[in-house]
Length: 115
Image (cartoon, rainbow, N blue to C red; front, side, top):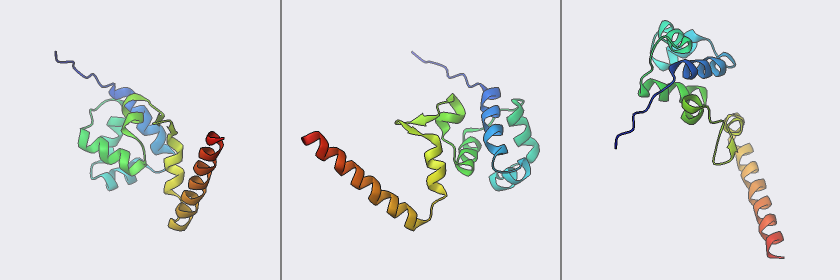
C-alpha cells in the first residue's frame, strides 16, 4: 500500500523565513545556497516548491533540522533544537569542556542509580 506524502509548502516556507530572518537576508542565503533570491522569496511565501536537495542545503546553512522545517518538530531525540545552534557557536575547546562536563554529570547519575 503506497502512502502519498503531502508537503505543506506554505508552512515549510514560513518556518524557513522565520529562522532565516534571525540570521541572514534572502540575498545572502540565496548566494550561499546557489539559487536566486527570487526563488528563496517564492519558497518563503509558499508560492514555489523546494527540491529536496535545496531544502537540505537551506537547512544545513541555517542549522535547522529537516524534521523542524518539514513537520514542525522542534526537537529530535528529546534534544531541543536550539541546543544544536548553541553548540555550533562554541569553539573546539569549549566543546571539549562541555563534553567533559556532560560525561561527569552522566557518571554522577549512574552512581546515584546504583545506590
